[in-house]
Length: 379
Ligand SMILES: *Cc1c(COP(=O)(O)O)cnc(C)c1O
Image (tube, rainbow, N blue to C red; front, side, top):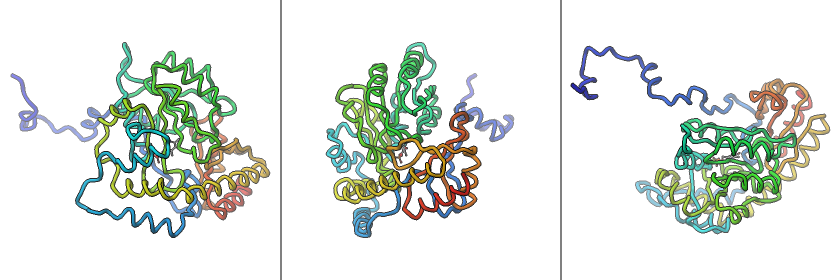
């Protein structure tokens, strides 16, 4: 006789399972290798660890955003299609509205892509992604949490794409998605155009996602590649130019892709206040953003030169942070700085050539000065 679940639950003779055993039977095995994202807790005078923009929004802009965010009606859901915001993005990015997919930060868009584009290749047990090492950790985390295989291809000694190695990984791994951040996080540089081109040309059967989270700080964008290749999409965000609190990111890609991924998107993934504030940022606050970007670019040159003068190595940056080589182990420098109230990001856990690397976001002038003063004692 077949016992259904109800019968099982009512059966006193079944010994209760302990909670851990129950979870172990239910959880994806890949979760065992992941850790929840936990920003360093504790109080720090200066936080230069998350690539946020310096706090320099004008009073007028703050008032305008507050006014725009106040809901017209609290009880209504937001616009499920985020039409106004998507129109503002489309205009900004020279795209059609149906080529724009919005998410609660680009993190959300990454998970949506992985959810939708998850079909294993013929003969493979799971779908795969290819990305670089180092790169943005969410590609790996999000992919593993959905059961994808992950192939990370080391960048070359200048932190640029290693085309031959990428080609091999693509040929062997047959990825569904190739994620490339340019400018890259945490290394800060833009990938050279010819190499990007070569990698995209080597992956005609995959979606190639060019993540341009830091494009506002960069001398050039790779977005034109999406006109040359049908398999290219571009990720953007408001988080790195002063609006991380809104959680607004988007994908520009082929309309057919956007239409399909949209089926996996929770319809109300972007709160109404964020939709409206982001529309205001894109339509009205261009000068505010330009002021932040110019300021950061100036500080990037100044702080990099000061760090070099302290004997540290600084990679060329096209972003709002610096990728800094330390002489002592980065873990020690990171701890020494943190003990003195300055938080930066260390990548020593990655080992190898990352053991001596710190990623330092650029802040306000006084914050950067404090970083430099503490670095002079801690390096
Ligand atoms: C910060 C960052 C993101 C995440 O942006 P959100 O829009 O805040 O989710 C995406 N990609 C890269 C490379 C980043 O550094």
